[in-house]
Length: 399
Ligand code: NAD
Ligand code: UDP
Image 1 (cartoon, rainbow, N blue to C red):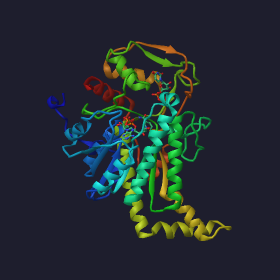
Image 2 (cartoon, rainbow, N blue to C red):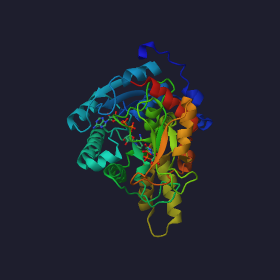
Image 3 (cartoon, protein in one colour):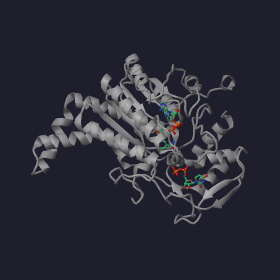
């Protein structure tokens, strides 16, 4: 029970990189209010903690279809800050509009969505309805309230499977399942909106494989039923809830034959949202000062013969006000290496066996992270051992 737990001293600032620190404005958040759709979920709740710690005010909007109602209270326990939550379904257009009439938001982080690849193949309409209708309702309410600053939870799944690794942001997009297509389509919608209305400032963060949990053990990932993803599955085997880890393929063309992914600690990912938010604010400041318009129009026009400066200015602005960034570590870790790290974390050997490859899986997926590092100043710093230690702590305290 959370009432009986001792909450460790919070030390987000102890954990962030020098780079992150250097990118922070001298001022804190100036009491900016951020709406977090899906804010009670895995990534949203950790981001809420980081934003509250940084001095932002947050409002969570969630229908609790994949999260628990006590998450806001747990966030308050960790941060000692108030965490408002509105129980609303994004597919309810009128209810979403009501939330925007109630608060004065400075920006929105849009996490809400359903995310199981396998389930999306079984229930495509449900996925398109929830993820696309929900997003469109959100964007309509944002437009109506003139709140045009958005960070969107995209995914590495938007990259076409025939791209070589590492994945770069300018690679061709495409998907192999309805879940992935919802992300591709939403990215398209946001890009098209940004092209016609430069007041929109959008950052699309393409997450790789988030794992881990907050160090307090109070919030973490809560998959319903038998987990599909590797880490929650391994954690349940360690807890004795499942008999053995299934290694889906040990004959891939990888160093140890098992699949390789780019795992990132959810707190690093949460901090990625903080730096993205501060980047968004710098975009707003620059736009207000018209610095982008002048500088980029001139530099691009001087390089291009066949376009007018105005066309290029428009094109350049479009490029600049809707941006995509990979958020990963840039390092690949195999299934077998993850299992070994989890065994170190829980202090025991875990039962495991090789199984056939899972249909649709790639051998190796990892990010090129240089764009996020260069432009956002973001660099993940927590390693695999810390990810597994925090996952195991959460597994032991999870309800
Ligand atoms: P999550 O399921 O833990 O959180 C999503 C939250 O959205 C849940 O609390 C759920 O109740 C809520 N929600 C869903 N549909 C809603 C609706 N119609 N109205 C209101 N609330 C709704 O998932 P997560 O892991 O925190 O993922 C957050 C976002 O990041 C999702 O969009 C997901 O697709 C994306 N993403 C996740 C991963 C990952 O591995 N976890 C990877 C890439 C991208
Ligand atoms: N995996 C596995 N056993 C499991 C779940 C996943 O071996 O029970 C492997 C999967 O084949 C992939 C990696 O673990 O190589 C990560 O899979 P996950 O579903 O967590 O994330 P994905 O990268 O597929 O989104």
